[in-house]
Amino acid sequence: MSHKSLPFGKQLAYSFGMMGWSVMFNLISVILIYFYQPPSESGLPNFITQVAVLGVFNVIAIVTSTGRFIDAIYDPFIAQYSDTSKNPKGRRVPLMKKAILPSMIFCFLVFFPLKQEVSTMNIVWLVIVLVGFYVASTTFVIPYYALLPELAPTSEDKVRLATWQSVGYVFGIAIASNTFNLAGLFQNSFGVESKVVALQCAVLIMCLLGAVFMAITVFAIDEKEYGVNKPIAVPMKSALKQTLANKNFLLFIVADFSYFISITIITSGLLYYLTVLLGLDESLGNTLMMTMVLVSFIFYPALNYLPQKIGKKIIVIISFGLLSVVFLGIYFLGKVKIDSELQIYSLIVLAAIPLASLNILPNAILAEIIEKDTLDTNTNKEGIYFAVRYFFVKIAQTVGMALFSIFLLYGKDEGNDFGIRLSGMLGFVLCLLAAIIFTRFKELKK
Image (cartoon, rainbow, N blue to C red):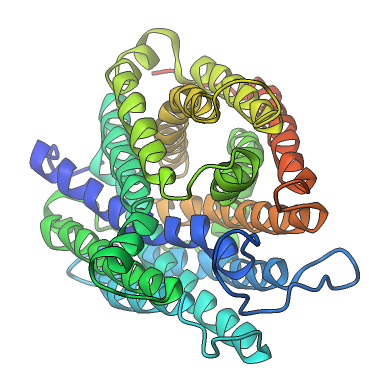
């Protein structure tokens, strides 16, 4: 499918785009709820009302759900635009280039409420800037993902490039997890008294870094040389219909949907697990993320070898099973008479194993599904396939963030933490469900 094999340096450059997007995305995933719905011990003020709507929904759940839902609707349109683009410079990279600056600006503005107190203006502002960030970042990431099957012609190439993509993603998580440490540096070394201002300074630096990483990809990858610049002629409605008629793809999507709800819950809850359930400092989040990254890297070489021997399907199913154990462990954090740091490090190390494979193999599997569809239909619908996948990923992330913020209504402080523990039980059920569903998936043979 590609013009020529992608050199190692270009594979590395491709991973930087994911790293930049991951930095910004994980700022939203990890810090947003904590920033706007902080536990009483955090030292952060309230910017929006904490009162439940209809006794069940809180404002932050409604706001984040609104932003993600609008973003999810936007996905197939940007995918179709990319798939049908006749831009002589390429179908993907020119779009990605335009998305970098607005992604950076809107990501920062999410953590810059207009009023330094509880205000309706902050709610309206948060909806606007969240939608802006999600739309801008989607304009980058959908074409970015659609490049993968074009740049990696063989199954081995797809796993290898998906591995580099995963490396970029986990490095992005690790970098974003330094935000509170960087905020502490501003407070302790530069005399910034306000924790909010210090955190905003840290977020600004993270957003700038993310933008630089994204720019490395768009300036390093020559789409005309390495990609397939062949616009599709299938109308969006027909392309979506053909995509959703692929039964194997639908099984993939359902398992993926369950996984992303669960992983969004654990990402949103990490700071609560540390500070409320275990009584540890929020700055430890950085060390935990670095530990998870380093441990997961140990398994990366095996994940470029084992799928060729035993297949990707069985590895994915085992990974879902291991992750369900991690979620079950969250429920018991702080309840057992074991050192608090040992408890959280044990879970992080165990989580690193399934997350390594679930960050790599699904993208390689989807690229193979797309490749088979291209051969069967003689049309390139990479963008539409990734748009449909990420439509459901975003709905899953919306559901995950909303559910977690709703759980907090049932306890989010020391001595009143039942809502936080509920998130672990839900993640346990969802990962088991994903494993069961994926047993029905028919792995593509070479």
